[in-house]
Image 1 (spheres, rainbow, N blue to C red):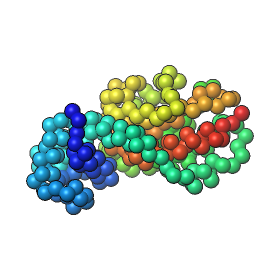
Image 2: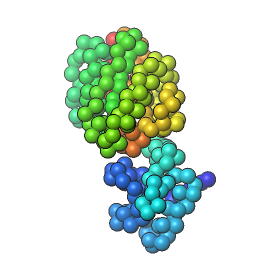
Image 3: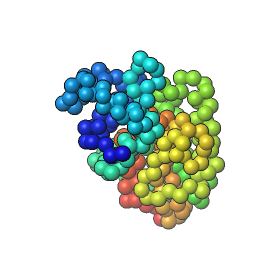
Length: 238
């Protein structure tokens, strides 16, 4: 069903606030943080409509709303459609601008710097090396989703499924985002992953990925991954 511009704005506002706040978003909170130009009653009605359409859910009877997988999917598609990118990111440019001897060092160094600019675990693989670089564990495990051991174990299994299938994944130059059940390589549906492909003359195809909870900073991560892809292309090693 096609949403009105107002409904789109409200849904984007709820997803954005939930990503930032990590708690259900109430109509009162939304009213205080955003100016949609509508009355509180109208805002509540719009939130109820978005819930009936499957974009939001109420985890508790008296709580606010949180996004469903469908709500996240709408949010991500809006970002990708707008093709938001990091404007010349001086930190990433500076870090990766040095003369490195080969693609292996560039990939390892790139993974570390991409992890600093994104929100999630960065994983990078080159077809010929058999190496999977992983950076960003410390920041990832500080997210509230990983306060219990069960979530950490689930993510470890999710990462293991990714490692087993990374060489079979069809990653094009455009960023692909898989949310929850959309993941093609794992039955664990609590997490999201974004993947982009990159080529090197010496080491064949490579994959750069960001993994994390569904409540990840999609806008920030998509922009960072796009910036990294641009730099990788400019610094393609022979």
